[in-house]
Length: 124
Image (cartoon, rainbow, N blue to C red; front, side, top):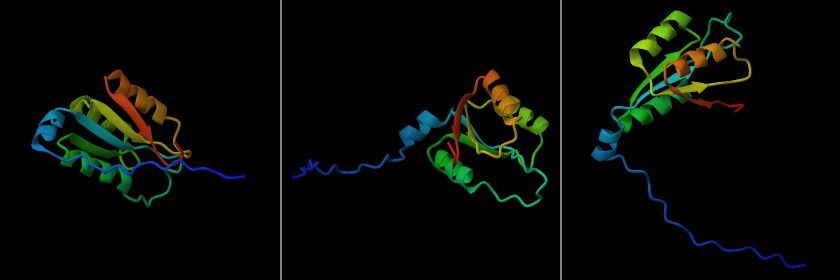
């Protein structure tokens, strides 16, 4: 039995160039990237959320107004202050299985203030 494989033509990769025009288009878009609280809050060693930091760097390069917030080392009241003061258009949040269930309330709070929610993480 012969198997036939369709040959696709190679397509040239065209990178999404960062231009002054694209930066101007993005400059009024506020993005808050959040590392969620975990269920193991008793552990004192917290590694910086590098994945979120990389995303923030890329957003800043492209002209977005981006901030990073680590809920593992900050409290809920300061989170609400950041939401109220920064007024993000988008809330990007890292979710994982050992998450503290109160994170859902934190996401609802941001959504109630008008933020669109983008969730990601290793288990999503």
